[in-house]
Amino acid sequence: MLDFKQQEESLAALGQRLRAHRLERNETMAVFAQRIGVSSGTLRAMEHGAETVQIGAWVRALWVLDRLDDLNAVLIRRQSLLDQVRAPQTRSRQRASRHAG
Image (cartoon, rainbow, N blue to C red; front, side):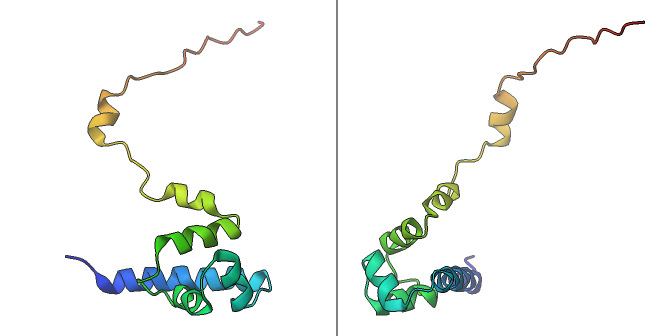
């Protein structure tokens, strides 16, 4: 079952982080909204965690904030347990150390 409360909280937290980054840059809503190509109303919706904002607006905001690489971690493919077992065990051989003695 989907936990809508958790989804809302995640979007709200994301919006708060976006607002914090905008304020750190000392940019008004109007200026930042123009930089990411949205209206001030859309930026306000993003900062409040509205689920109706298109992903493209978020991508442009991440790009403007030089944080687009953060998006690469989203939905990254994880190796399953079966894949881990099937993967060849590659260990580097270590030589015995030589001691002068």
